[in-house]
Image (cartoon, rainbow, N blue to C red; front, side, top):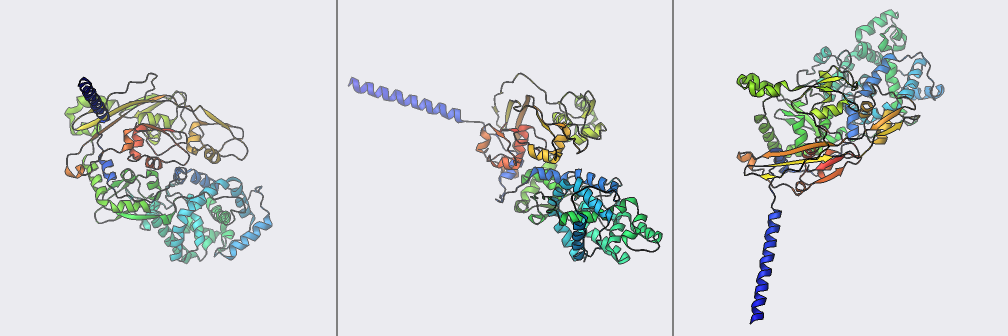
Length: 611
């Protein structure tokens, strides 16, 4: 009997112990529920299209860069067609190739010494530029060819856009000519291209090409010669007519060339040289770069409400730079909405599918943002002067002075104050990205810069409240890489060096205070600098909206957001591809956790997932 009682007591004690352990485990597992922001709630309810969007960020930077346009324009304006250039291209072979081009073209392509010299000049100085231009041509040339075919214009005129703008729709000449076809303001208005505060259709590939086709057709009815049409496009029909008169009535371009403006004298030869290099690029070892965005992979959708590129990028999980590339006619990165006028935005087809399938939710999010837009401190002061006492600190502290220290560059300074490099240059009248050591810069920012600290802070506890969940995490990141240098060898250029080390031309120029793309043989370049330990405080504070439409989007936080993990960027990674590796994590999350202000990532860069 005693043994039986003892066994019952042991069993009861064991049961109580197990129950206590389960209760403790359960209490440990209870975590505060972090509410989703309205943006994440909207996106979590989207009908997803499974087609993956592949974006090469380096190529996107090339598309938006003006380096080629600036170099190419300078070449055309300064090239001396009478100066012999040493290049491995036998004259007899060039004559044969020009004759072959002439036989299948409506242009009168004839060999002359000036044309040979400019072709050799391009071969000597611009081979790398042409490989990049060929990547851009994969996107733009189908647009040109379709339009020219409808208007019975020679398809070869597509090469003129390279001479005009280096295929950059954002190119602006020193005279104000804008877009792929470099229309002046008055000419653009003459050909019904809309130009207002929001839109400049001179930068619209489709509409500007249609206007250019109209011009070419009219000039051909006047001159009856395509070479003179090209000359008139550059200098105007009046200058061509004057040159004909000064040449005793001769009407061939090469006969009147000496009486044309200096820039026009190199214009048509540059057009022929461009055509030649595109036709015979393989024979000269020019390898076209790969274009990952092609025109037939995109489509347009009518936008029924004013939207910013940032809103579209956040909702569709795509880089804002890609939207800018595909929609260059929107000057302020905003798609406007005018009553009675339709405005379209061009996107990759898989993003179009997501947009069309979720239009109601997208427009609801845009309305929500516009209704809850916060008022700036300056505007608040004008509206409520009585609040001056409370706002004084904010308003008069937003202009700060910063003294440039050793190792600083504009990118690092901009990141400290959460501003753009272009703004710093504008505030301080800087013409380049170079900045002198010890110079004092004016910074207009309401925030304090990120400070370097040697003492790590303790991690604050997470408080759970009935109406909101606030997570505050302090983390200290240490730079793992040391300064990396590279000595320039024969055949190197900034493009090849950037590609070799997985960086960009702009970064190399900024790190080495270069004002041009020219680098000397034997020069030592800084590829990367050691990253100091920077203490960053990330606060995630999301509130629950009160109305029913927002409540319908409530959802528990995804499992990926309940853990903390480091991710090291690999070559070819983008914020979009990284976010897809962690279910429930968005691009905006990664940016917020790591203090990223743009889409630029570098191989080896350390990213914090969930702060």
